[in-house]
Length: 388
Image (cartoon, rainbow, N blue to C red; front, side):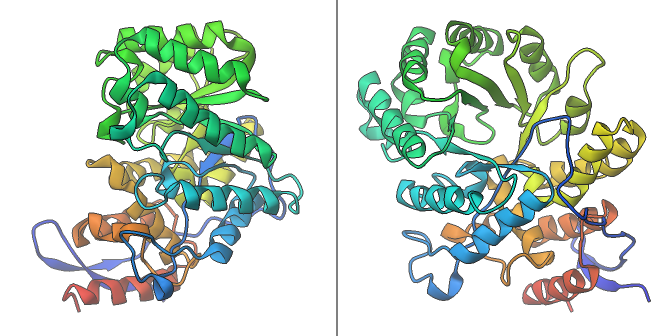
């Protein structure tokens, strides 16, 4: 029996939608990939204890950690306490510390589990950063915390550094100091201003070429301490330019939620590894696709992952920084959490037509793991907006 429900369209009309997707089967054990694949994971709020969702949102730690087990079971590494977890948009440094502690502890009890943790400067308000030394001290605080708890660091882009730096040399000074002190190799993090407007002009220039030159200078000078760099500019040509110019042994991690399929597959000479927020939302599909790619089956890789790209482009459409709402929406539809709410009330950042589009695209991409549950929940959701 087919599933149907009424959904709103962009023109304001309500039309019947009939589901067509088929859920992706789960592997019996975590598959092996030939690409390093980090899923940047979201946190689950606790609305029943959320008395101050904007100021100090409550987190459901048990469900948050259970979702990490879900990702590990599908073969992913986890990029912990990153943008997808709402760092700086609902999850403060105190919450990030708790998340990092809990995830590192859980990983010790899960065979094969691996993660790297976001370390930035978000406990230092950008307005309070008056010098490069302030930024260095903030980075040192967070990386020390990650390492003290047995973790590896992803050096997140810094709003404070973007505010106080006057030239590429300032970025070189800060990054070289931090990398020289790091215990393990670090993943760098190039996040475009479409994800965070406060990062405009990162690496000392608003233009790509001089910014790229600065990032490459830092990597070359600190090659022994850099595992790779994640680039999230939503521009595949710019990522390929970076990828082609990286020193041997330094990896490019795609953070391009618009073009990840082709970047991961590669051009026959080079390919990108992955550190993606969309993998949180489409984990079973991405897992099957990556396992197929590792087996040399590019046809299945493409047939499974390419339908997820239109869905990802919808979730990450401008204003891109609100993509977390779509990621959590799918986690709710797929039964990974019992409610649709986000820290800081960020579910309100998108409108009903956006969510209706996500539902349709997720179905067509075979991303709805439990279609009956998803349909029931979607009916209740649109009903709140007057769609019967």
